[in-house]
Length: 107
Image 1 (cartoon, rainbow, N blue to C red):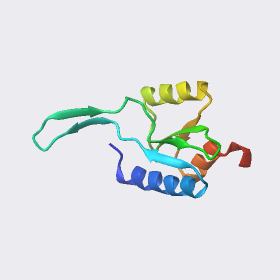
Image 2: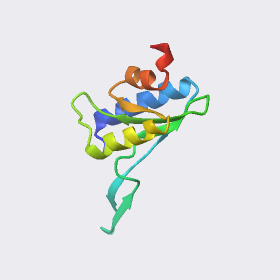
Image 3: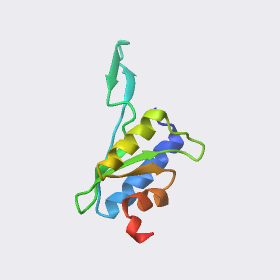
Image 4: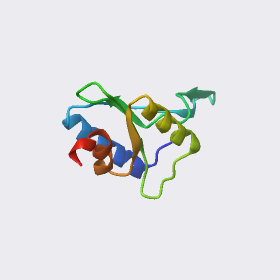
């Protein structure tokens, strides 16, 4: 589950990418529990925090990390797999990192 600092970074990235014309979604994954204590597993392990499409239709996948956050093996594998399919993907610790991933031609 994302911590508060990571959530703040995610939201700033979402706003910046939407302002740049992208369509961005938040993906929740992991184990959750109902109010009755029943475990519910959602999403695919390693799926990026944010995903969507660039104005030109190219797929985007961004795994958001805090300055101290470390990527899990599943996250690294997911990023590698989608990059192999020509998606724009990577790890971002800031809005600038995310913009570099999605709009590398501007950097």
